[in-house]
Image 1: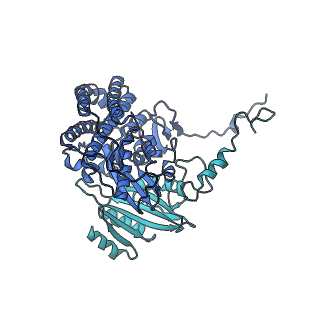
Image 2 (image 1 turned 120 degrees about the vertical axis):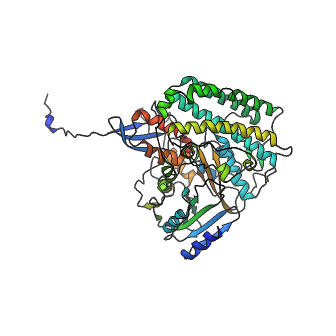
Image 3 (image 1 turned 135 degrees about the vertical axis):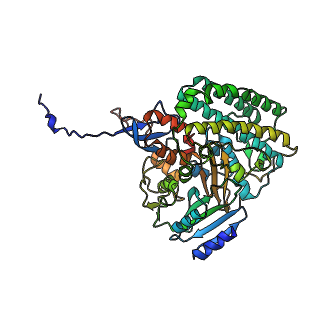
Length: 378
Length: 169
């Protein structure tokens, strides 16, 4: 055998290594991937690669009537579909000039807050699971499931409800629904001390999450962050207060903030928000009037919406969710564009935060940013 | 808002400004002015770029770029600004606004991919969602979805349709 001269191999002294993190990586949650340039276990540069769940919904929606789009809208965000339905219904109502009855608005707030609660619990599950707090993760998943049971009774579906509708909601609350909701909220609320002891105040969790993925207020503003990430840096920016929709104007609630801007303060903002959501739901049941829940819309097959464009926004559990909707006077939308909160978080903020972090913290940082991949890809 | 409207009209000739009923200030600017108007609005406190969108007005043979801005405020502030500009469909080129708003990066990348608009000065105009290049970028109105499906998927044979050698046709 001919010997291969070793001197011919180009010995390039490279200290950096390219590492593909996701979509099939144990440390990755969701259909998302990051390409990392690493040196040792320090990350030099990170670039996010979305697109594993791109279904082209915005294009598909241009081929379907205004009502036919509902089953598609809710599938954009798997974890919290109600805020997507809400933003689409609001945009259609605004373009078509449809009023919503007061009772329907209260029911919408209840549904939105319940789904915010479910989404935050899911977030807690993901974060606790990631860091190895399996007990807490199971609690959070169980409590989320209790809320899904409520949704099942209200709408007939557990995940994709298609309940919020232009002109109101599809049907009134079932009998004794209030008692069931309050009962579930009581069950969850009575476990808060346990959650605090096992997770939020846990010394191990503190050490793992403190000073991880830290950003300042100015950085967060510059990179377009919203939601719990921005509020964890100390800015009280919440669409429910700034541009109130549905019935948030008449409801008394606070916006929890923290000052540090790291993963630990983010999860505390989320925890405090869950408590606020419970207060909001209780108030809604007290203030809710009797009456209609649905204003009739025209025949969906012949429904043409006048020419125009609109931008509406709501506060989803991850941040600001917007919709730019253009109609050209036909029975189908001309252009639909969703501004999803995970989009700047996952594609701009994450790349920034991963610089100089260690490989062990990639999943930690990503989940603390609350990135949901289907929302980015759409 | 009225004051802002007058300031924009006085400092940028050729910009059409109107206030819409839902607390929206709509600006239709010339394409040269966009960069300086964005800078001007950022200094005025509209420091949150929410969205860059693109609409394909095929009958007018133009693309419309839409920039939506709001302030990062803590008090109730319903105002938002929609800044629009038109570029021709034959020569879809525009200047990047990353120097003004850093979070414009993925939005411009997405518009480049789905509408085929070239953003001059963008550091990374690579694929964001899609795998391959298309003859016509898929979000343009003249992209025929049915034809594309036929052309692309009918090429792939069924499992039974094997030729004599046992290989796929």
